Image (cartoon, rainbow, N blue to C red; front, side, top):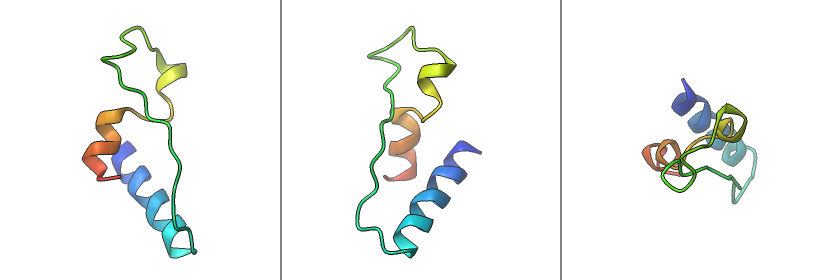
Amino acid sequence: MARALLKAAVGHAFAHGATAVEGYPVDPRQRPKAGPADLYQGTLGLFRAAGV
């Protein structure tokens, strides 16, 4: 679900004229104690898998 939402958000932004999209994925390997409050914006693996 998260991957589909990320792709849809990026697609929507570009379809409406965005030339760049800013994001702040978290790398759980760098922050092993990160909890849901830290990971809500997505993980580095999610962004890489989505190709963004």
